[in-house]
Amino acid sequence: MALTVGTDTYISLANANTYWDENTGGTNWATASEADKEKALRAATQYVDKHYSWLGNHPGNSQKLSWPRLNVVDKDGRTIGGNVIPDAVKDATAYIAEQVLADGGILPKRNRNSAIKSVKAGSVEVEYDDMAPTRTHYDYADLILVKLTKGGRGMTRMYKG
Image (cartoon, rainbow, N blue to C red; front, side):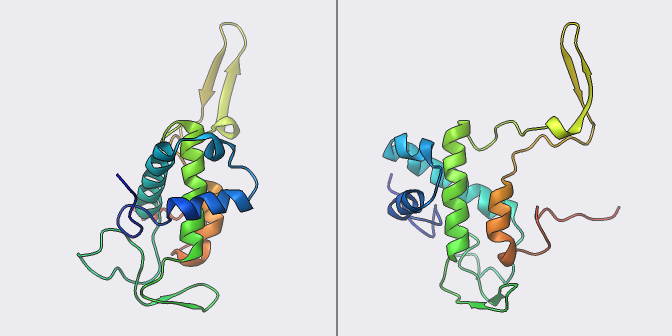
């Protein structure tokens, strides 16, 4: 099933190919089949759509994805048109899609090495801190999208209980 920009992806396959032709990395992208690339773009779009808290307003029920949006003024003061999917959203989607191909899915294990609580040598044992992250998180995508999201890096909204 072909991709439809604005319905099931933020970036076309051709534009994602161009992104990886023009940027370093993308080894997994270059060797993947077209069908696998399309699946990865769908998964990446779902991640981008659900993970971030965006500036502006969703235009209504008839639009499946979060972008394009209304009333968006990015953190540099630029107005984003109500019919535009920003390049940053497309780039982050292409980046995450390549990571999906590399990891074999959208939810690989996250590196928890910085949160090791203890290590045991005999019968090898590693214990992670209780607060060690277990979900997938794409730090580079956060950097790409920071000017279009509410809050700072890692756009998960926190509430005091």
